[in-house]
Amino acid sequence: MLEAQQLAFRYRDELPWIVNGIDLDIRPGEIVGLPGPSGRGKSTLAKVLGGYLLPERGSVRVDGAPLTRSGFCPVQLLFQHPELAVNPRWRIGEILGEAEAPPAALLDELGIESAWFERYPHELSGGELQRVCLARAICSKTRYLLCDEMTSMLDALTQAQIWRAILNIVKRRNLGLLVISHDTALIDRLCDRVVPCFADHPDAQIDNLPGDQKDQDRNSGEHHREEADIPPDSTDRPQTGIQL
Amino acid sequence: MKLSITAPDRRSRTLWTIAGCLILFSAIFIGAWLYGEQALMTSLDARKLPPSWLHPFGTDWLGRDMFARTLAGIRISLGVGLSAAIFSSFIALILGLAAALLGRSVDTVVTWLVDVGMATPHLVLLILISFACGGGARGVIIAVAVSHWPSLTRVIRAEVLALLSSEYVTLSRQLGKGPYWIARRHLLPHVVPQFLVGLLLLFPHAILHSAGLTFLGFGMSPHTPAIGALLADSMRYLSMGLWWLAVAPGLVLIISVKAFDILGNNVRAIMDPKTQRE
Image 1: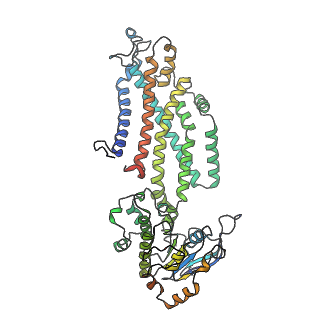
Image 2: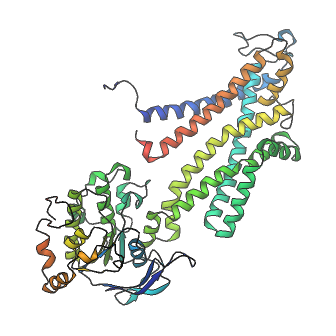
Image 3: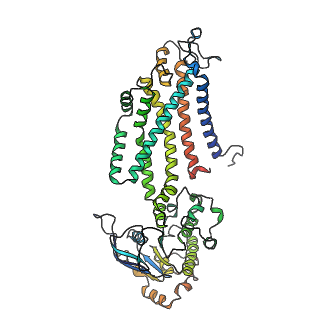
């Protein structure tokens, strides 16, 4: 289980707290949503959970042990802008194999073609590059994936393709998944459970979320498998007619 | 719009430009090596001759062949420029890396030095250092090397700092990569091209400054056929109508400086993956 207890973080002593007193836990195989409007510290929280930033107070523990500071981190973070998350002077083949060479089945599942291996990042589209980042992050030692607005800049079709692939992989490998997004409809659709860490502001749309119903759904156990096959029916999101 | 098929693409044009510049520089060195002797030979029968087939750049008031003198001069300037640029860019590399990697106090000192270096009037600094070092090729090399590192230091420092905070480097740490691996695989491929291009673009400055210092009398001795000395000498004869004494060496100086500039820009284009395949 990925556990965060009483996490607090600020960038400098004289600056206000960005993350303060947050408790969070993600079990393997569980899909948790973290909604909240822009600029509330969702990404900072993700960076603390992923070991990019050290919390000033509180702790992050993976399966009971504190997050390692060296070696491969079992919690992997996916960023909003894949073009910033890859070295522009590396070819796609090198990027994919940075931690370990991804198996061919994973590349197939994510629709990554071997013809891309010789290309540079700027020669791929945003969606293609995000899938490359995903393949790089899903290693044999990866236990938890944190997706920080991972598909916000992609069109609906690409979003749906990517999330469908992630849901399959997460289910098969029993990974814990944290979906961070300002898009409550997306979180509504994907997640077993929602943590309202950043929902204390009147702007937050979290109140609209059917939280109770979510919990019931999770208890019933089959919630997202069914949901993955039905078209979006959300109220505050334009109908795209795309099936997740 | 229909594209012409016969026109070479940008990549091969860039490669040809780089090759052309390199051929020009080797021609200068080989020419100076073959004709070097003639640069100092006087021939009183052939004084003050305008350009002709026998003497393409004419002869001076002692009958010395200006073509040979120009070749020798530009070779000396290139040699001085090369040494000064290499020294200068290595100072920049070391200071830039130190500022970015050795913590805040080193960074503060280096940044301050860069500011001081950039705020000091160039030519004054050059003259002072060259004069203090006793002039000559050594004085010019030291003066140019000591005064030209600040801008490249800034570039390298900024590049390394930006890389260290970039998402792909922080992500690489989370993928279990150590600092040496990251330095070799992530930092080097960015810093080396910056360094090489910075070095190439320092050449024109170094050449021009070595010629300038010599022209002003603070550089190489007037007996050495350096470009600056040739131009300074020609001043006295311009009013007598010996225009070729200034025009030919001046043109060659401008052409070689421009060639270095073109070389630097094309090498940058070929090393950047964004423009590499165009």
